[in-house]
Image (cartoon, rainbow, N blue to C red; front, side):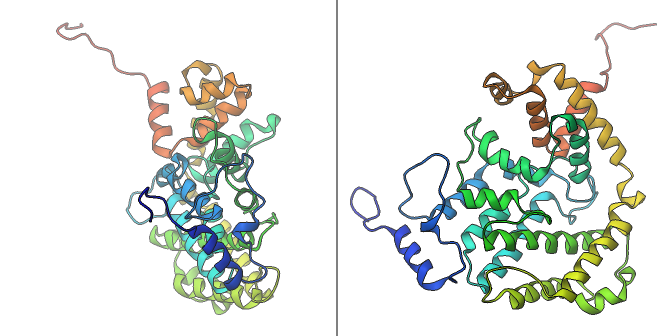
Length: 350
């Protein structure tokens, strides 16, 4: 370093050169990014994708994931997944695959860490509730909301100014989508791998299902434990994607994984024992929405700023609710909707 404290040679450029000598020709190179919506001076240490990853980790929406439901609503126990632990598992799976295929790990990790930033409180139950409420205004999808978080909601309306590749991967992480980069395709599959296996693990822990309940024709292909299934799926993707300009699974493994998801929908996702509280979630979110749509001025200032800048009231109320953690939503509901007891100290009422 020089006496001024500045790096005397550009480490970022050296990293970018190393990417070209080390990564697959099908990888996305940091020095060839499609860029940001707003130009800014580059860092002399980190590549653009590394900066995106860091911005996501340090944003408020990422921290809120620790108090958002993955599958089980407010589970009593320390070891059930939250939306944050799910996100970390997706990132770990995705980086393993990207490293094995010599793809850009930094881009992969940034997409994975940001893919669920727009998820609602109470998981997909909350998402369905907001989607029904806003149907006439275009509906609600958490992947689109995740992009809105990084483009509009973070930093008091300024957004994180992420690269186009990261935003594309976040937007297109769902099954029906097609990301523009192989790194985005890795995250899309890693998301399925993570939640399929973790949801089984949590359901077994909760006593909803047993390992023995999983059809044998699926365990014969994928394995009979969480570890063995993860190992099978990750290895299969690597074997079937190596040297190709695409990311995919072998037909038998892919068929088995989607059959396993169908088993989960039947045995866990629609199980009354696991999902008995979801009607209450719908009612609570409906009432919160109705309250704030008629009391706009009671929302936090950062959301009122969006309205003053021309955003529709319905969109901003939806933003506010989607940003809530489970605990925040419940406490706010109690404060607004549940009457408080009234008393006057020192006065006895008869």
